[in-house]
Image (tube, rainbow, N blue to C red; front, side, top):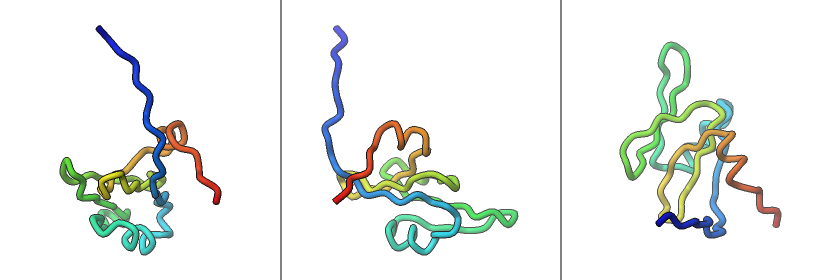
Length: 85
């Protein structure tokens, strides 16, 4: 039988990669590294599942187990709301 579930509300930290904030991304995510391919910046994240390529515009998320991963902007905006202190 199928059951329905709802995500538990948790607060995460994330930074959107905009191609002008690579230093901020690399400071935030020590499991990330970057390189240039055909004059295009490439961001790689060492995730729990293995290397993951992030695209400009993706959000880099620090998860509940201090793991890092990328999330496409449309999915991020459907899933998360900004917390205003």
